[in-house]
Length: 326
Image (cartoon, rainbow, N blue to C red):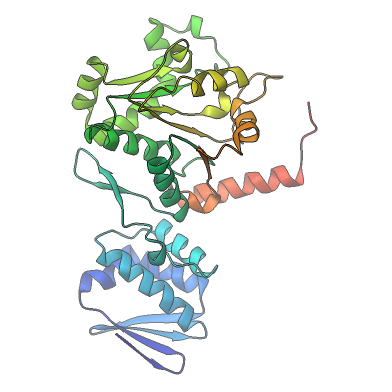
């Protein structure tokens, strides 16, 4: 319920935790709003009063934030910044049902949801297509959400196996000189996938499923020659595949299976002269209707807000200082 008086809006607040959530820890969220809009926001009893030259815009943002809190989610500065960025484009966060859909729960009971419109579209695409590419910068949740979708499909008995693969690109050191057996040599490359599994399933449960081979975490090379039926397959860091490796991976898909390919084409670590299989696949497969490409942007980053600024700074530098073709 709200009443307008000139450049002033009053929003009735039913619970103190809503006001506290909108304001944020030490008023961090409030300061973000005030940094973006020429307004003053104060609490008076059971009302939040917004006044200033841009009161109506700030009112829309606050209403969105209240809706997020009332849905049971918590607010953080990254979400507040994202809601503001959408409002400035005339897009509603709540209107796009961004945080309505729980993908799965972690082993501690925390719900995993899409946090941006790009993520929500990604989740929808994975549900509806057998092959989905998630392409974009670090921190956009490409791999994390794909693993969550795989675990959800496994728990719902939609698939019998989860397979997580990565190309083991040698970053300045040769695998043969690393200590341990082959699995120990490649495990460092697979660590981000293990981390996601442990968070969602718990370490013990994940290891039991791995021992039963219901979950495989493997280097991409292990996929050659296999046909994978009734499986949820994720290829992570796909920008570091060659054209031949990408074709090999995509043709492993068997009956009842689903594949998600994730990568960041700005982070290619292949040796000089090798072309990225991900870049090639985007060009070759863009017109195949059964395959969906989801491209994430900087505003889909769900890590520290500084990550988005770093990404933008690098992109701006690359635009202004293009490297000559090799």
